[in-house]
Length: 200
Image (cartoon, rainbow, N blue to C red; front, top):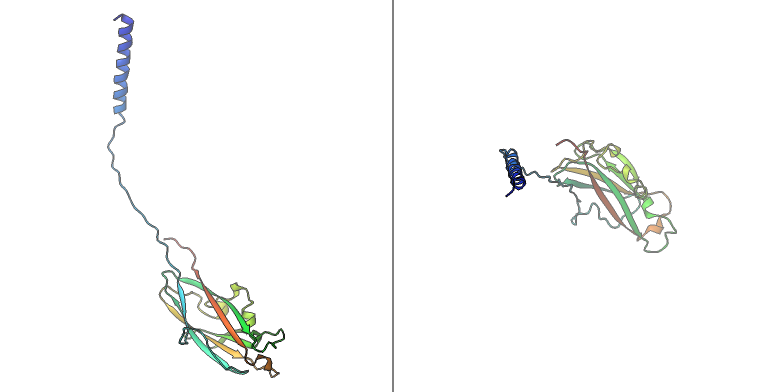
């Protein structure tokens, strides 16, 4: 082997040794820890327990002008999160048995009076007709909030509140015969809203 080849082989061997030594300088102690975290969302869950046998807030027959119907229902927070407000959406359909309502609305003659929660007071705090209640923007129908004189701190998880409403078939002292035999199917939807986010 001539001198150039020997020199080249020596240089390559030396470079390889240096690279192996250099690679070894990157070795170090280490310790690996694995940490498992979790996020679990809470639940918003309310239900309404009406006083009637079928759990309805109100089922009544044979009403006439001047009749009043006082009903209490229970609003239950069965979820794991507090509720800040409960928005009420109202809608109804009228069955015009005789077909002679002439474009008038039976809901105009049904007054709805919300009473302060039974555990707070019993005064009428807000009243409207069923037809107007069904037209009002939903943001105005927080049945727990100050608008209806209810609780300002919402409904805590695992608690209930008794709410009272008085329905009245208004006697307008005029001829209301067109409503004889009519029916009204009422649907109330309760929409629970969460409280504001907070640091956890």
